Image 1 (cartoon, helix red, strand yellow):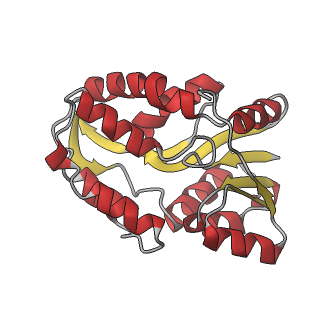
Image 2 (image 1 turned 45 degrees about the vertical axis):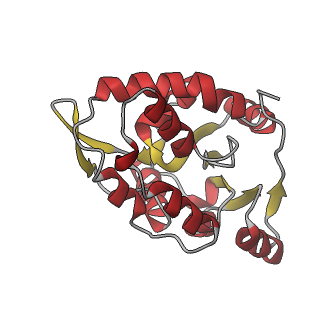
Image 3 (image 1 turned 45 degrees about the horizontal axis):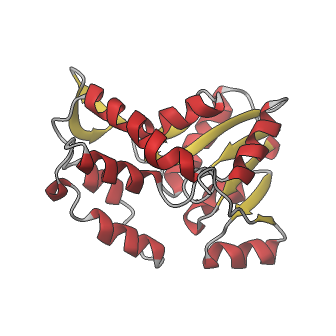
Length: 218
């Protein structure tokens, strides 16, 4: 069985992008004017009315940042903000599965943000939204498409085909209704701290529901 975990509100409390943006502002890696719409987009997402292109639109304003600055900020963000907010239940579950199963993340968050989390768990090859760089400087574009909604499902499907694996052998974990395409595609769907829309679907279809609350920083 291959176990694929969403990250935000599934493995960690809240969203990795929000933690990163706060740290990037604190470290003067980005300016508030570059992410001024992000709080609005997150509110729309929370209330079930997301702009499906909000990641692409946000990235347009992140032109001209060095890869080195982003990676340094991501490392600081992980230690200060993300690591203390890893759910202890998720930590235990992932470490148990890693003993004999393939485990990786599939997230709409940026790859540069989640690499330290991968390293913490000893996971390689996760699927994430990737920034485009030219001469190690951000171009304001993505490499490919964001892994949001159907984009995540498509990326998982491509990965499975490349590795000659079937979706029937996948257990996918997520908190969000936006991941319904990936949950429905997988052989086993598990709702973790599900939002209202996902909770309704999970109960109706008999999917397992897990509730995580404790974090490493508690």
